[in-house]
Length: 314
Image (cartoon, rainbow, N blue to C red; front, side, top):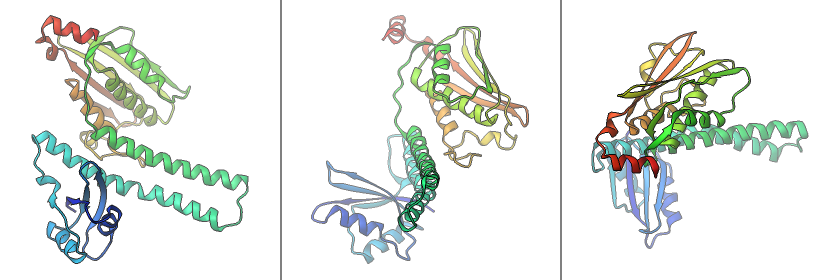
């Protein structure tokens, strides 16, 4: 279903009154996905799913609600094609988030209703109830954080870093069982990159490897360096990825996990491209998967020596 944006000036009418009116449901097929309020300008923006723009206009006429504009997300003018694509992704993200959190929210609501209406639960029952609610809350948090990481603006800080340090920092942030063996590279390689963003990529890829091996197996990390590029290879002995799915793994929303956001690997790809690199994967089912990151050095070769030094030392 197409996604639209509408804007309302909150003047004489009450903000909550407008929100409630927009959120009302009828037979028009118009669904409110999300709302954003600009307090400084007294403007309310709504993301709407609807069969057409006319359906939204008819609905507003029926409820006597005045709007500033209604437009398709795809037709909103932006500075360039990349910004337009980003804005469309934000709209899709809002719709996806609203869909994905309904189930865990229902779980929390049902458990609370059971606890309110049933006899006082004993300690064991309470533990089960709270555990299920915590799991539902964690799922919502995971969905929100995944979308925020993907759509948030990223400002890179390029400096010369030892990749071994970034890998070690990433591994420290992962809950790794003793049954997982990680073989670190024996050589030391430096690269011009953003430490924090590259750490996010390594954390994501290594976590995926741990999950693919069902918490038992081996991960080997290799660093290859030459005059033109730096390569990082992360290989696991997990279940592997079928060849027909391999081309899709970096596409937004694609996931084979029941609780996955489908944004982890696309976020990694986005970060690597911002670091002027590429990321790819090869895999054999039942054998394992290798992710290969290549960071190009020629992107920084054109910098004046003084500029390069400033970037390395700031």
